[in-house]
Image (spheres, rainbow, N blue to C red):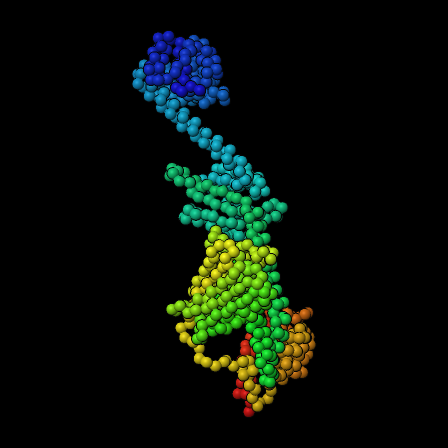
Length: 640
């Protein structure tokens, strides 16, 4: 490949040709010579010079004709031609030469500096043109080999200068459909988004920003999603503004987003259904516990402890079911607490209640060391019991049978430190830093297989942090046991002594007419237990197990209050509520929705259907009786 530009010097005058050659060689150019037009054309074809210095007057072929032939041949058309003449010096001669394809025209005599300057100027122009052509070729190859559609607009001229071949594949139409009218593409945008897209594209000249996602309709009426971006091309001359635009097919991404959205919807629906199904059996259990409290005045201490245990475990299960409704919130540590002053002894008792069966099955010795004085913390009783229960369960799991577990609590300044220590397999030094990470699993005791998901300790850390506390893990290494310490702030004040009244005291019936309550549920056990509770609380009850029976029963019974399940067979509870409101005899009754569906939208639907209140199963009497008492009080105030 030659380094210096190659110039072909064509002149039939040996002296003139020699002088020009020497001038150009001194200026650093490589020069070859020809004395006739025929030789010049042959050397042009063979040597492909960068520039031909061509005299007009030649013995065989006129220089103007030689220039025309060079420029008319595609293989040589890009070669520069500098025409010279000592005879044809008029303006018309110059015009004729330039019209014939010459890139420049000089009249002899030509000064050496002028010749070199013209040659350099023409070569610079050739380099710029070559770089421009190369750039355009790169752009063309790039634009024609990508799936995105590239557009170039001249907005002031309202012309589409270029659209890449991908347009036909993406938009399903020949590019000629948009070349004649630069706004015609708008007609192919889905009608629901056409106005928005037209407005956004129209603001491009003002804002300089256009980035939209929308659907386009293909000729077969199928729909495709695209992302459309455009920007003003900078550094263009005034009056020659350009807009570049790129359209990308995002149908696959949108399909994936829809699949993910549908999966999330199915997950939410599954969790709501699961929660509903779990709440249904919990309702009768809670009702049975409340009934035992109401009717169990002569019950022994053992039965009372059993009732308390059932109640606490039902409360715990209800909270866990509530968490299922927002599992993503749990995974991010966003658990809503229900804090109150809680006695340390109560927390430990509840935790032992959960963990003791497993500790006993593992034949461990459990030592519990608590302060002699009452100690109170401010927190969520269920969650803090869960923390201690997880730590005790973890200690039992990772300690070989027959080990020792010690739970120790002590007050240190304004904090309570609870420590769970075991004689188990211990923790390696490299594992202890990540022991609280989600899904982290340590080694297992030699008599146990790997089990669990590795979420217990992670949940412990998150719950403790939500209580403004800290948790630490320590082990001297494998075989030395482990110690987990939880530090919690103490409560600012201890509650006054005395127990809160139970459900039985919440609804002492008066001497007035018994309020009539119609209980509607497709679960016979739930209906029976609710009737027994209400009867024991001084209410008169009737029952129905589906919507048609409820409508018929309501007309005859004329209840003051209707407890109506939403998930009835055949006709839903919402439709049943609307139908009941249309019956004159019960139009004024208070209707309370009892349902396993507890999301905000479920509550809205219940109120829209005509319910006065919305309670989520399992319903405690502490929540239900105040609503019934409002009805009783309203009835008493209107009685003569």
